[in-house]
Image (tube, rainbow, N blue to C red):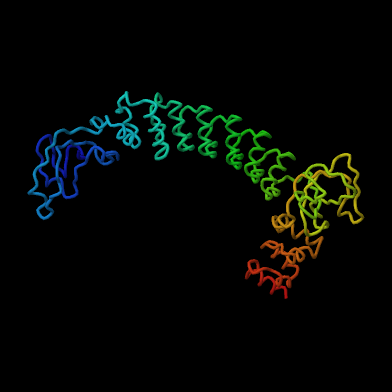
Length: 392
């Protein structure tokens, strides 16, 4: 087999029969059928030739001494007998979907179409829309999206089964789903929680699955509940920053509730004079320990301290617990600055206690230039040094 263009080789018209070897040029080579799996992008005709040994090609005289090539048959790409090879059919149609009509009807069984769908989805998914509708069976479409979920964008008739297969392959493919069902949404967020942002109609069940997979997906929950917030923070403590400012009261524990010696537990705790505060005055509770976000039952007996910064209660409901140090490190500069106004030594105490990050360091130096001696090298940047020197 050789490729040729409109029956021309180097501008010379060719036909069935003997053809001078030197016209083909030094880069020509004959191909076996298996070598034609790659589609003939540059050529529109195929010439079938008798077996030819080109190993003795003489570059010095341009092949003039070589015997001629005997051409048996010349066919257009559309009409070549190579369409009887299934692998060639798949490879060629995956590049030129307009040639789909050349595939023999008896080839188009489920196995063949699924193999074609997989190749299209992986190499050129937008060509799926060029496949005739009668061949875009549910099996074909499932094979395509199972290889590449985003191929769903080019499926003409989406079904729940096809869409489910797509989000199983790639949960982000939910953005291509035309009609989202509850099952499709649950499957999506249980695999990648942050895909909750693509869910058109959120339900508590869907939101719970999302935050159980990724606590930070709480950011995308439209209507937060205590249970959803609890699950999110249990999965990732950093999700606390996305909890809406409702029921935000805190108490400080000496040890984690998982400790065998802890007198506290998740849920309702009934003890006398349990001290708590709101977000503004967490620092009145201390600067070390485990911070517990709590709610106060309606029937609890509470009393406010004389300075107005804390309360006591005989009942609290612990929602979740995390190291106080982590909470400090997640706060923004504005909040830390406001707290420093109420508690002037707060940031110094944090730094001396080893709770440090760039934000805490910067806010602390603004108020206490000598605090630099307690900063670890990684936070003692040139800008921090300059800030401290300017205050002298």
